[in-house]
Image 1 (tube, rainbow, N blue to C red):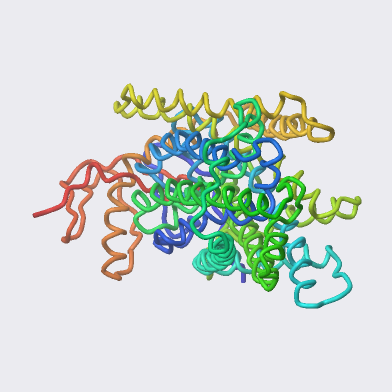
Image 2: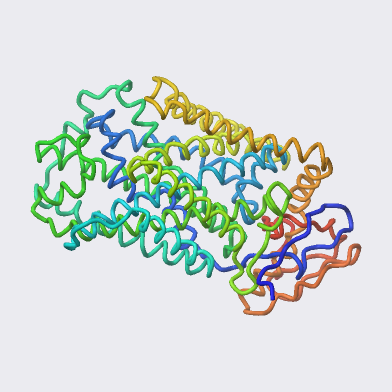
Length: 549
């Protein structure tokens, strides 16, 4: 017996049947605020920044590294404000793809989703490499001599990620939350040791940015911004969230603020510690390990390495979950093979998309290592390649926001101002990626990403030529869903809270749309044309639903 449910090609014609039992649906109301926050925090991966990237940023910004991270956080905050214009009003699987489509049209939305698939591939590959690096550190710390093949460690991390993601999104999210909490706790404990060692002492040189110029910090800010990307990944779980219109935007902005504050703090700590050690932070490959030895707490080697190892695992897991939930709606709309638009009957996960995406991630990592690239190089290259995809997606969502608000009649001057600021801020890492020209092969990376986007553009053009009705159908379904799904979501939220089964009875076009007695009640009205949006109902702000007395 088949374990999946495949969807027919979505349509948006008037009078078509609404989503029913034959349409693939992910597990609804499965994730509260903590798992959504964990998804975004894990993909940002503050541990990755603390153990590897702060030292790289220090080479350019010196004692001003903490200020570079602060500036990077503020810059991306404008992008978050644009993104949350959508997240406060609607949510579905692969939400950021749908968001861009509603503002700029289906072609822009599809290309944004295509870019996000690239992003999550790169960061997941970097996660596999980081897991391998710190697994070796951990094994060395517990006295295991000799070496374990990186191929085995890549395969182990990839296989466990796929198994967990396949089984249940709730398990994935809770595991991600626990692992990242363990990792950050270990790192903060080491930071506490550093501060306690020196008592109440402030590095005035760092605080006053002594000798730091804006020119020194330009490329460091690029690195810092790339360290902070991933906050949007909570939106990919919108179709499985509890109270998504509240919890998803909260998770997006909280993840950026929390991880930004952590990176600012750890930048100060690492610069402060290495200054008292008499070494340059930029010369250390694994600075926290060196700091632990210098401060005579070498037993921290093991928990720090273990924390980093599990954090990189959770990074790959969160990328696999996020990427599969972008593939899921893209397949439902016909851009990718329709077989990927399937849901496991028991687990209610997009298992085909997970398996295909996980296989691609692991295969590329193994091929790169077989070609002679060490795990650290794979980490650096994959993370840098992913950054260009994030920039593209963030540019698109920032520009889409005012167009979306204008369609709703809610555009204000401050919304335009925020979009302009977000756009200008994103130009900083974009220009910094080209000037001054980075060394080879990094200087070729933007063109590799461009080639990937041209493949997506060619596929989109072919769809337009051979199936000209597809893009208008996607646009129509996204637009109509804003009005069509408020009734269903109001009912399903109430029934979920009351632990009642949702009947999923198709509504007959033209019949009055009424809600069972309870907290929500809607006046009888002509039902809007029902639609199918990538197999997952889009959750919209219940502006047309009133609370009864």
